[in-house]
Image (tube, rainbow over all chains, first blue to last red; front, side, top):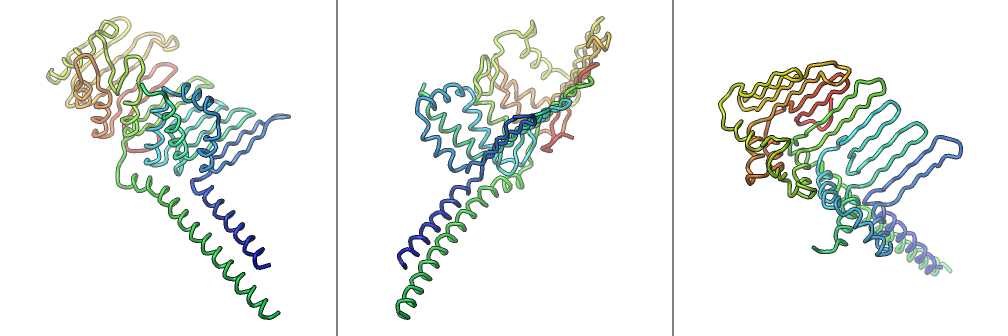
Length: 145
Length: 214
């Protein structure tokens, strides 16, 4: 019985520690709502610390393909994500047209993208540290010139 | 039995306290890390007044769109050198001779070395163009004539600090150093850089210390 108690407590402690570690970098959230019959409703919350870890399980060829496609943007994205983290929260881009709205902003260390149009709302919120880390890792996959 | 119970109780309590202490310590460390991570940007913004360049495009039609872009100069200054596209490399634009039959660099050199006052005035049926050096600013004024609905009637105002012009010309002969220009711009007071108005659209580019448009 004492051994079982220790095991349970150890498991609970480990689970708590893992939970705290998983969420200490924040959470990436993706929300897609289609307001029509049979429309999709996607609500994802992914611990930011898990994203770079998950990226390591993506087959190498897919990562290289992604890195090649994003190659021209990666240096700018790496620098921008780092610098934006240092600046005050701001609305970087806002486009309003009748019922359509697009917004790109930084909020508390997160990059926020909002797209609203009739029948569809998309909301993405990603920690800038994750954007920086992923851009840096993809950049490392680039063949050296 | 009592001995067993007390022994079990003591061990369970020890294990529980150990687990709680480990978890609590870990949470404390993580929360401190999180607070530091969140605190550093705020700390950076508190001690520094960032300069922002704003662009606002208003379409005056019924379902016209409004575009607002706010970019910190600091960010632009660091991102521009990472962009390499066509004649844009390392934050510099290679002019490669003339742009629309105008030697831009020679024109800017002429403006820089000239005295205060109006020095270019072009009046014709389509436009009135006036380029002047006023104090520490290069001022360009274009007034178009014609039907507003046909987009011909337009007004363009450009007001560029001369220190920025100097910085743009600080590179080699056939290029404009945009990064140096941005660096010079970041030392300038709030200024309305570009205003364009026609019957349908209004474009405004300005510099200030606010991180949002009005």
